[in-house]
Length: 386
Figure 1: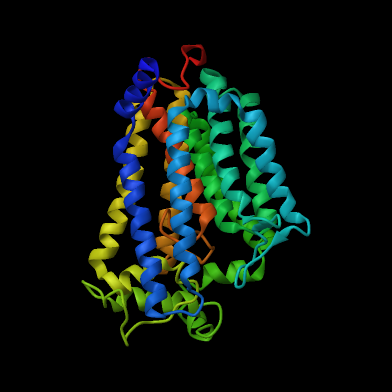
Figure 2: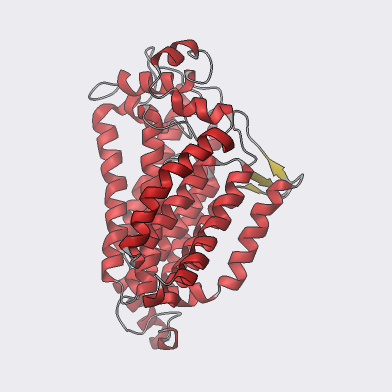
């Protein structure tokens, strides 16, 4: 009994309470926003279902984060042969009749197993962070050898190509962000960076002219083409126009959360455009505080990376940082009209149970690295994983 109490005391002492508290605060804020959205009746799409799902997902996510943080991240990484194939298979099932789309989306991103419906790409992000961190840490100082770099690029290309084939451009961009940030953190040589700068414009030109669909090109062109914006005011640009209008209508302090005759209706207000709802109801102050909270979560990831006792832990934290950072930048950028609308949720705030749980799982990995930054005896920890 004394040994168990010792484990629990050690676990609580080493737990990254700040990271957990930040995530919980964001979830409370999310449930409050979705509840207010439902009560105000701003959109018929938003019912009591959204805030209840996010509340349940937050409870499950907190439990998952606590469990993951108690387990040594090196042990979790060594189990790649279990979760990597499972997550890949689940994503590949999207290409079968089990795959489902949602109204207004271009991709088939939901897997319907009858008793549950979820987004397997969110699970694949966690699996990719762990497997890619393990791969990079195993390669170590031989990272910049041509053969190793080729294998690393293949490792990164697999999930990106699968997700692009699925049609989820937003998640594909997140995977690319994870790949680039983790590779940079691992110490990629400047020669490869220079080569990438030379190759990227050619790749973009080729993709623009031969790979991208007309609607994808239009979504990017419309960001700066004012004539196209006017022509598509009731088409592809309408959602972004309404999102910017809603965002700016709140002024400094907002119109209030529980009803106003000056509310602006925006499609997908509970998911892709929830930042516009924050601006409309809570104003510039609400947007600023939301962005600051997300920035602090990102900084906690970087802080845990700097405290990590090994390369594996540091790279895991950098991968999680990439997820929170890219999701935040893309989502807020969509609402501000500086990024194309590609369907990326705002971390821990947008409606969606799978996204919320996966973000907590990612946070749990960072908390695991933080908790095991010292060589001490913890629950589910053994120095044989060092």
